[in-house]
Figure 1 (tube, rainbow, N blue to C red):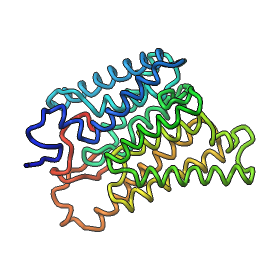
Figure 2 (figure 1 turned 30 degrees about the vertical axis):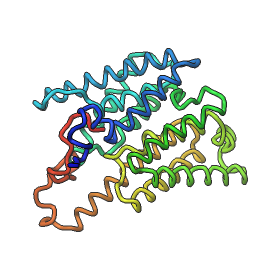
Figure 3 (figure 1 turned 180 degrees about the horizontal axis):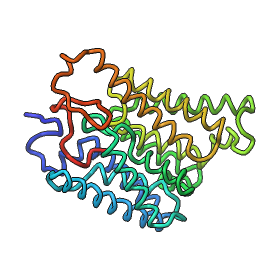
Amino acid sequence: MTQTSTGPRHLPAWKRFLKTPKGYILSALVPLSLFAGGFRQGPVGLLHVLVAVATALGVDAGVAMWLRRRLGFSTGGAITGLIVGDVLSGLTPLYLVSVTVTVALASKHLLKRGRKPIFNPAAAGLLMAILGFGSAQSWWAGLSLLPLWGVPVLILAGLFVAIRVKKYPQVLAFLGTYFLLVLIMALFHLGLASNTPAAALRVPFVNSALFLAFFMLTDPPTSPASMRGQIQFGVLVAFSSVVLFAALGGLSYMLIGLLTGNAWSAGAAWWSRARRGPVANKGMRTGFWGVGASPSQEQPQVGSS
């Protein structure tokens, strides 16, 4: 049977899509959001998701028209909108939900190498919402508002994504390093008195770490592909996050840690290409930061996350 990169040719387009990384993420993230929508903050959270996804689709459609590309459903934009809506608290005004998504997608389209974004768009938008507007983030779709029994549900959905998109090495590296360092801090009473390490080992902080690991850390365009690179990436993000947590506390430490890892991944890719020399890199297309990818490796759709 002849295979393509997205599945057998005889399958309908929607079934082929479900076998892509974006399809796997949506297959887990949408049911998880709907499940979380049945509890406490859920109804307001689902409204935020709808506003965030609608904003994302509108922004990506506008970019496509500006660049004179073919209009289509931006799956990458939908995923970014879903994640932003899943993380922001129900107390967040709807206009700020749209602003957060717009900033997230602006970072995707402007800060890139070739046609791949440097930073995880959702993380960039959510960090702006904290630093610029002091927005609350409950990570409600990570089942953070539920008792401890919600954690296994989150883990099952996340493992499905990590295994299917082949990013489980970096997820395991991140979670192992993160919880080990936090445990060491708790045992030796390190860190701030206002944000104790012991708190990071309980709900809802555990949920936010798991949600970030499974649905944001695994973003293919902004993380390494090789197993060695994935392990290094996961350890770096965890180490950066814990150091920031110990020094500053607050809500943004994991987002900054992830963006630090994204910058390292982009820098490592640039250094690898630079070492090859101009002959090996001939034909590379240059992005906003002067780092490119060969045309055959680029993703044509606007919705790439």
